[in-house]
Length: 132
Image (cartoon, rainbow, N blue to C red; front, side, top):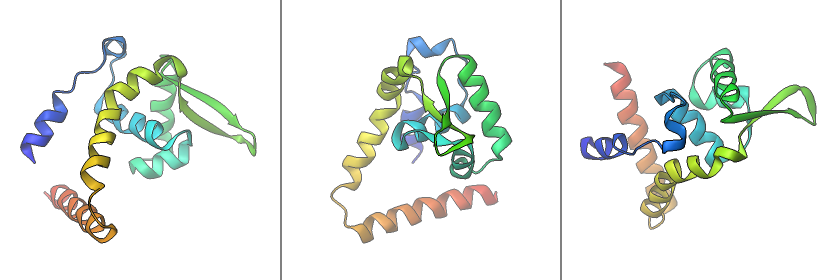
């Protein structure tokens, strides 16, 4: 696990994104939008396990920097849908997409039960870290 974490920490932020002062909290938000597509603020907040106001602030910050775009939900005009701006999609995909590809390759040979056990094990590890 320490070796894996160390390798992830060494993944460089693409040069074109370095001036944007991206923090670790932005990485998770960008990963959800990259892998799951456009989402609403409340959906992002639930996935990130933070308050919607926290996500709104992060989205606002990244939208001002041109990294994210907010659009009106055609089904509910009060709701905003957040997506990665097309100008930054390739950079973010190149940066974060390798991790998704690596996970897919690692999990592909496992049965559904084995993948479930693996995910449950990681969740137990995360819970153990949170207790301390």
